[in-house]
Structures are given as structure tokens and as C-alpha cells.
Length: 109
Image 1 (cartoon, rainbow, N blue to C red):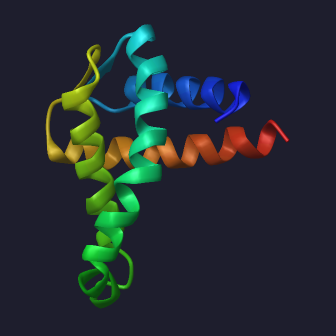
Image 2 (spheres, rainbow, N blue to C red):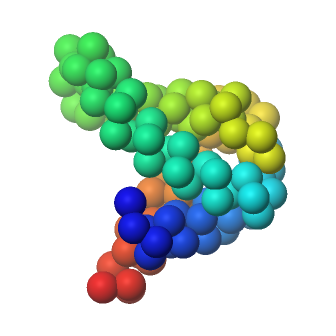
């Protein structure tokens, strides 16, 4: 993860937390969360995806949104300065975060 990805991720986290009620993050928490989410996506997400592959196939991939929400809630338990009030807050946070990261990622190229 290079510095540009880290900064884009941090900005996307701050914007997403501002837009979604029930999600709170500090500036330092956003920096740490960007790294923790990257590590979760590298190490934990592939294992969970493989374990839930049958249900993911049955739901035509929509179960991935549920997995993302639970991973956001996991990160909330790990990162001080980042708080998610409910599953639905984590669900919408993950969707908005993905959209903003994609938009910023395309703009930074």
C-alpha cells in the first residue's frame, strides 16, 4: 500500500463517515482504519469469501455486501477512534466507502 492509496483511503473514510449517520471517526482513526481495512482485505476477506462461496453464488454476489458490513464492524472493534453504531450503518458505510474510493482512485490516475 503506497502513500497515495493510504491518503485516498483516509479521505474516503472521512467523507463516508460524515455522510453516514451512526459512524464516527477521528482523523487519526481514519489513518489507522485505512491500514487496518487494507490488512483485513488482504488476509481475512479471501478466507471468508471462500467459506461463504455457496451462499454468495445463491444470492448472485449480494452476500458480499453483508460480508463487507461485518468486516467494517470488525475494524470498528479493532481501531480506536472509529465507531459504528449498527449493522446497517456499517452496510451503508461500506457501500459509500467503495464508491468514493473508486471515484478518487480513478481521479488520481
